[in-house]
Length: 340
Image 1 (tube, rainbow, N blue to C red):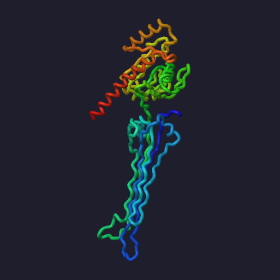
Image 2: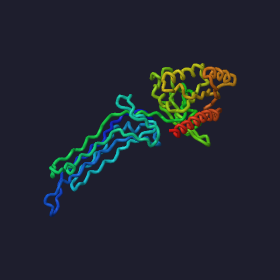
Image 3: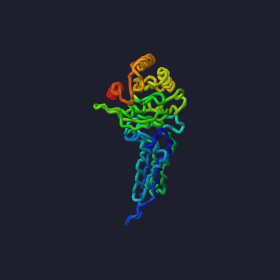
Image 4: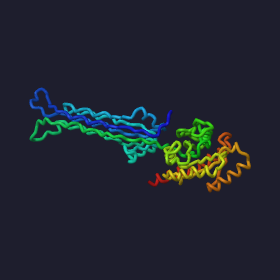
């Protein structure tokens, strides 16, 4: 399945049905009164966050969503039926913006959340609604009210518990492949990963979602390289796993480059909890590992885990460190929800 994290759509709600002009016509009833029913209400257009979706690719092939109109009113005081709501399924984590791409309409973060994008028009009143003591046979009815229409932008920010960041070819996809059932493309050249990848990590007693973000380069927050749009996918993560390529000549520079991009991008990325790991230790001897770990610890000012995505060495320690942060964040969220 192809990944698409931004799409433009057009939505149009249904028009209200027209009211009817009709009169009661029965045997032995010489002067039957007005009996025109009201029109039905046009359908709303609703966006709903759904489980099992993690891309907006469907909206590449369908951009226009037009809801049905309400039915017309009929004689014998029969009202027209309301049209069924048109529901647009989007992945959890989808933000909906106005056409200017800046005005936020809704942020659907949990499956089942809904928002009305366009309200259906009300049905028109039939002539029975206009009967008065002085006007016993009104020949007036209302047309249905028009629905709404608008262009909107959908922007997906993946919802993952942890996000993997690092320079291109730092071993992020390899790590994701050995800790989950995800099958990202892996090769020995930069920018192998062109789209964010998700994997579910099982620890036996719990599980969490890990996101592999395409490699960042200096200036990524300005759109250089693959661009800054992928940084948005780690905005919702509870913790970042920062992988540093142990075979790089200057591991401190590699670390500082990513940290600078996170600070420049903003949105709280630089303040997120971070687990730092020196990757590809299978390609280094013990003395070099010790030296580079010490250098990286001085720059990061926190413990540096040793990791090999190829052999799996250090994998469990890194996962446990990530899970500890995630578990604490989940408990804090539950306490906030309970207090609310």
